[in-house]
Image (tube, rainbow, N blue to C red):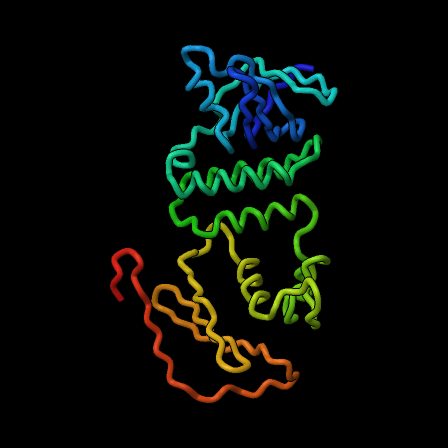
Amino acid sequence: MQVKTKAIVISSLKFQEKSLIVKCFTLSSGLKSYFVRDAFSSRKASQKIAYFQPFSILEIEAVHKNKGTLENFKEIKSAVPFQTIHTDIVKSTMVMFLSEMLHYSIQEEEKNEQLFLFLETALTWLDHHDEISNFHLILLLEITKYLGFYPDTSEIDLLFFEMNEGVFTLFQKANVLSEHETNLFKKLLELKFDNDQSYFINVPSAIGPYNYRVEYKIGKVYLYADYVGSDNRPVRPDNMTVKVTLTDADNGGN
């Protein structure tokens, strides 16, 4: 069957000396693997290989036999010519990590149009923005909506998060995040691609039955005391004077 569709490159693997096996997530047919014969042999090999960088979005014409074997391209061209994703070192590192995660996460050879459109929109956003520090975390969390295991947030006010069931709970037991970890997870759930991501959290410092932590963003500093003791009735911590020093990591100044 001959098809014309958009495809997002998930991974490419060199086969023998001159060929490639390319795994793509297609709009029309879900996950497909293609054999690119002599990808490294022509004079324009570098141009051809550039199509198959992780998360490249292509317009393809292909022959799908749908027999569980490698398919073949008839024609390929770029559908979304990215400007920064493959040249910016931070973005390209994120893309390599995320494509590896999707390589193992998306297994179904079925159409999932909503997931495809989400990925296309997210990658376009990444290409056009510079404040991207949490992009990979947000993307992985959002993808769980389309794969069927997004956390149940109906009782998000509870203290702990149970990872196996994906629910918030009153009780701390095996496979449950600590209260501090759960609070950080709740903050992650609140993040969206267009949020202000200039937000930082220091490593907690333990004093007695409390973990003290500082969260800060431009113009604001928050100090928290997280109770980690065994008593079910925590005592309010003693008054103390706290000095918080914020360091400019770029030049070493305070």
